Figure 1 (cartoon, helix red, strand yellow):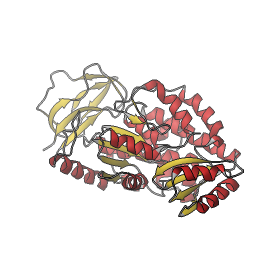
Figure 2: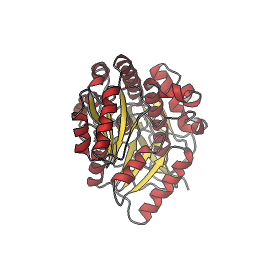
Figure 3: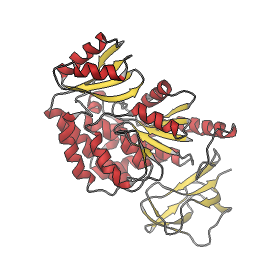
Length: 392
């Protein structure tokens, strides 16, 4: 079984969108700019490191680039069995699962980043990574400090992030080293995220969440708050709001994914942070990061090799290989297939295979139509697979 994981704030870097400009999936950047009223292309191509470190910028750019990568992967026909995202990445996972539309997710991420930026500006806070110390001893180090400091991320065995007021974080770091931590180092962030310091941002985010439609995910998504896999739509607004003031249970989420049968973990988006955490946390799993168009080809080759060796799973879309491609929905709405079109029928580039909300669904590929993956009159989301073709 295959898990898609999505990175959070901190994975961004200058010009990280440059390798995607000529790719078909770059069109999502313009859609994101229209949805949130900001020039996302400029941020992905021209912003320097200091500009990208701002919470309102790092979150938006990381999310949008993760969606560009996801779109490129979806066009090849590789689909996951489960998904999860680290902090901000949870929005990417929900968008990938169909629980959030792309436009709604962009607006939520923009609002979340702005709200957290304001909260951080109003309440001085910072974060630090504690390495080589058991969870309970890190919690004890925080408890022994006369100040506001909490565990913010359970990332991997012996890798925990604490957050709070700068003085309290520094004091807790020293206590952790006294208790046996190999190292405690400050992180270049401008706030104490995933702590009670983010309560104002949580309240603002709740209002934004109340204005969007959250659907049931097509695949289970593992939640940061409690590391449980969920498919019910009604739980997610509260989980997303609670996440801002609760520690990210990432290590526990990785264990959940493995317990559910995932043996291949693919990180989609900038950086390789989650890939490193998976390697450190889990044994006997395959890990891969996809951040560039070339990485998509590597993923295809890896998935094909795994399935050829009998390690692949089963399920809709999982029989797709390198010579096969997906036609995806251009928008959300009800799908109506073109009359008279059926399996094994030749399709040319640009051919209409159906309509979603009266918008044409055109194939970007030439090949043989193998089957429709959406049913007639089924409501689909933007980028949801509609049909698959064999291209060779």
